[in-house]
Amino acid sequence: METGSNLNISHQSDAVRPRARGTERSLARRAELIAIGRKLFADTSYDALSMDDIARQAHVAKGLIYYYFQSKRGYYLAIIHDSVADLITFAASGLELPQVDRVQRTMDSYLRWAENNQAAYRTIVSGGVGFDAEVHAIRDGVREAIVATIADGAYGRTDIAPLARMSLFAWVCGVEGAALDWIDRPSLSRETMREILVKTLGGAMRAIEELDPSYPAPAPARRDN
Image 1: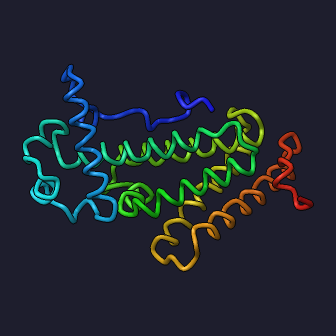
Image 2: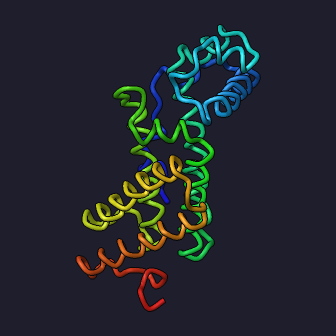
Image 3: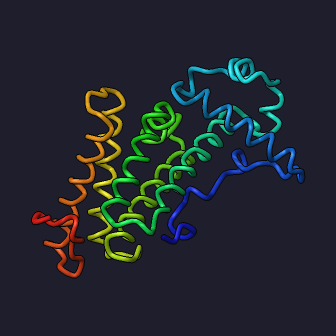
């Protein structure tokens, strides 16, 4: 999977990008603040925490957060970017696994992330705080990364035709809506949700083959398997 050309998520605005401090200690301190923030915002919305709340719960001076991230928004975007980067890195790995195992692994990690980072997930899927171009870029990056992961596993390449890409893209958008409803109303187990999403992906791949026979559905997606 060629992550460099497919992920807009790698781009960060000046508000999110770390200042050039030039010391390993500064980078480690910034990473520590992000790790703290990931825990604070895992189930708490952006608006629910003030900078005073964050500083108090993180046991740091408020000025330190401003020093590294310039604003509350900059801090929050850095937290989201960091946690989503972990998800994408995991989804892009496991190349040695059989196709169906890789898809199940990717979907399981996606659902785990949504379940364990509910507030951040809602922010990303809904587009951010108000209309936030930076969060939209993160969301688009996640979508393209998953499309590329599935395409690479199914067809052996990521530069697929528009029809195949749109079909997989539509499936990913459906995954977002289903996961959003699932974390709001968790009546199904994560394992059941994973199987639902994997099976609907099989349906999407069969539809792609029907519309464009040059993209045959992989063996695990066929009805006779």
